[in-house]
Each structure stands twice: as C-alpha cells, then as structure tokens.
Amino acid sequence: MSEQDPERIPVIVGVGQINDRPEDPGDGLDPIHLMVEALRRANDDAGGGLLADCDSLAVVAQLAWPQLNPVDEAVAELLGMEPAHRMQTAMPNGDSPILLLHEAANRIARGEAKICAITGGEALRTAGQLAAMKKREDGEKPNALRDASHRVKKGYAQSYGLVVPTDVYPLYENAGRAAYGQSLAEGQAESGAIWSGMSEVAAHSEGAWIRKPVSAQDVVTPSERNRPIAFPYTKLQVANSSVNQGAGFIVVSLAEAHRRGIPEDRMVWLGHGVAAHESGNFLNRDRYDASPSLATSIERCMELNSVTADDLAHVELYSCFPCVPKMARRVLGWPLDKPASVFGGLTFGGGPIGNYMSHAVVAMVEKLRGTKDKGLLFANGGYATHNHTILVSGAPTGAVFPQDFDYQAEADARRGEVPPLDQDYTGDATIESYTVHYGRDGTPKSGVIVAKTPDGARTLASVPGSDTAMIAFLTDGALEPVGTQGTITREGEELAVWSNA
Image (cartoon, rainbow, N blue to C red; front, side):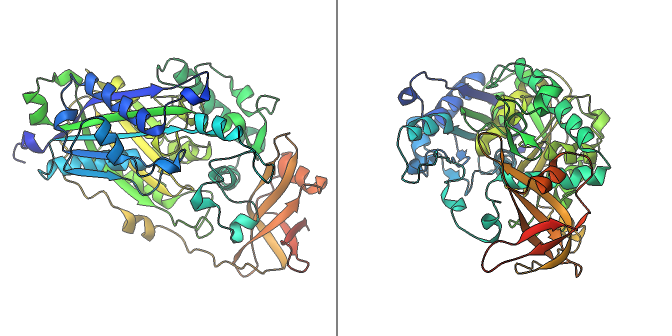
C-alpha cells in the first residue's frame, strides 16, 4: 500500500466539555451556550485558532429546549464561524456523536474539509426546574422525555405503557437474563458490578456529573434514594438525563495539524468503524435477548481493525441501561472486572440524551494521548435501535478513509424471522419478555408482557398493579417468568390482561 496523503488522514486534536450547575435555574446555560462553551474549550485544547477556519460544524440535536431548534446556525454565529458545511442530526440518538465523528473523518478524506467541529449539549436539569415552576392542567409533573413531540402519539405499544426507553430496555434485560441462564440475583449482580465500576471511573473523571462511588449492592437495591423505575431497574441503573452538560471535539487532517504545529502526542487517530441498526419499531424485532445489529457493529469493527479484546486498553460500552453493555461485552469478550467506560456511564458520568458519546470521546482522547494504546467506542441509540462502533488509537492505525461504515445488509442477513404482530389476540400464550412500571412512591403501577402466541405471533398484555400475586411472580425471582405460559383475556375495548396458567 502506498503512503497515505496527510491531507486525507483524519485525527482528533481538540476536546472539551462543561458541566453547568447553577443554584438558580434561571441562571443555567441553554443547550446552545453549552455547545458553544464546549467547542471553545476544545479549540483551546488544540492550541487555538481552529474554529475561525472551521470548514464543517455538525451538531447533535437537543431535546431539552425544543423552542431553540435547530441550533447549528446559532452555535456557528456565536463562535464567529462560517463553515461551508453545517448540519444538525434529525434526532438526538445516542449513536449521533460517533456517526458525526465518522462522517467528519470521511469528509476530510474526500478533501471536502480540513477542520471539522462536532458538538452537542443538553440542559434538561434547568428545563425541568423551570417547567416544575409552571402548573400543568393535568396535575402531572412535567417530563421532557415523555412529553417530547415524537413520543406523545398514542399507539398500540404506548397504550400498554411502552413509551420511552426506560419502558423498553427492560424487555432486553429480562429476556437477556433468561437467555444467559442467570437467576434474577445473578443478573442484578452483573448489573451492579458494571455500574459500580463505572461509578469508580466517574469519581476520577473531571467531567462526570456524579463523582461518588457506589457499591454494586447499593446500585441494585431499591431504597428511598434509589426507587424502582421499571423492573428490574432502579434509579441508579438508568441514564441520568437531569443534567446540564455539553461536549465537543475537533477533527482535522494530519497535514493541517502539522501546519498548525500541533504535537503528535496530542493527536488521536481513527481506525475502521461499523454502523448497523434494528427496526425503529421495537415490536418489530426478531428477539429481545440479543441484537444482530449490535453484534455486527462490534464484531465487524474488530475484524476490520484486526484486533481482539486483549488489544484494547480502554472501551466505552454505551450504558443507558445495563442490558446494553451486557450484550456488548458478551460480543466483544470484555471481562466483567474491567471498566466498561472511560467517562463514567450515563448514570454517573451523566446522560445528556443524544450527546453522551461526545463526553466519551473527550475522555477517550485524554486516555490515549501520548500512548500507543487502542480504545473502542461503542454507541447505541433509540430503543436499542442504532449501533455505531469505531476504533481509536494514540498511534496511527493505517486505516484508510473515506470508509463505507454501513453494514446494514450484513446485520439484516443474520437476523431471525420477525414475529407478526397480533394486536387482538386472546387465549394461551408464552412470556417472551416483560417489565413492571412503578410510581414515584415505589409501588407497582402496572406490568406489561410481551408474549408469543401458539402460532408464533407477538402480542402484548397488561398486568394490573392490583394483581399482587402476578406482580410478585414477575419480580420476586423465585421462578423465571420468561418462557412460562399463561392466558390473555380481554373485555370490551379494554387492554388485554395476562393471567398465569
């Protein structure tokens, strides 16, 4: 292979992040100003002067302040930038920062840009505090996640309480635990170990939101400060979106970095990356105990870079909920006793909706600079929908850009048959997965069961919170509910109801 043109080799040279914790909510920065400050810090980190000549600005969409959208033009204006290319992602998905990193690398390799800036920011903490000061007509506490415009529609899944990711990811957790052959206690112990390890990372991560280590037992044990959310997840097992955080990074051509006098020990190189996705409809999946697209993204990335887990010094396995790094570490072969994050995870590092992985990029770059170590960034978004994995290194990787990172066809080929959906089914069925939703006081509100009919169709059934026996069966760990049989009944236009056989 001939020597690559330095004008076409992408490197990360600047990273920056910010936590904003005002005592008065009215003093908090909005997402635009969080993004601006993050990029200013990234610019300073790279030695300065890059933003003024920036060719491309890409922004992760923000959810907290919808009245500001789109925000990319305002970010550019406040930074005095006039990039030829400027865009904002369509949605605030968790894979967005890695997608934008990969696209920036390709843009540089095609000669379309020399300097690319990527940023994102969320101010849900301030937005929530300000909203709480306003009374809602229905008396409910405002919730920016559930109230988002793309989630207010009422459909089949939503009618059973499957609305936001907190409702859906437990389906993967419970199905996965059963497939792994774990008891409830064993599954929770694994979650606790991963999350406790991330809390230790966050405690030493300057940009993390919560910097206090938590024991594995405290992570999974319900308490007044750790209320149950959706079985088996407690508050400390879910992404902490009530944060004001911004992060950004700057990618340039190697030749431009040399012209700017940026030392090589400040650069981080990119390897090959792979993206693949599940159906946007989480009821239109072949299974809930694994993800073909997640597996394809990680496995093919490792193969293309000719590395194994033993070659990686650091990983960031996306951690909105325990089921994701559990699936990812099994595909990767990553040991339980090694940290699954370089930043601290979405509970402790902070979960700014679609921009978490920008913080992970910041942390990974800081880990790799001045070394020959390799790191893996695995991002997930949506409802276990979007997956994007890329290798990064403190030394040149030899990877050639631009790259076609779309491996969707490969993921689709390894996917099993998707069960048809039967929204009107009554009769005998088998539990495929399930969860129980809790009120703020910690008491069960209702359960929802994803079931398979004898004909192989998929259907939903509810469990009233008042059915204490069934709620106990689903949550006490005495028996594994997945795979057990029951009966679905329906009266009039009410939701279908599950009862055990």
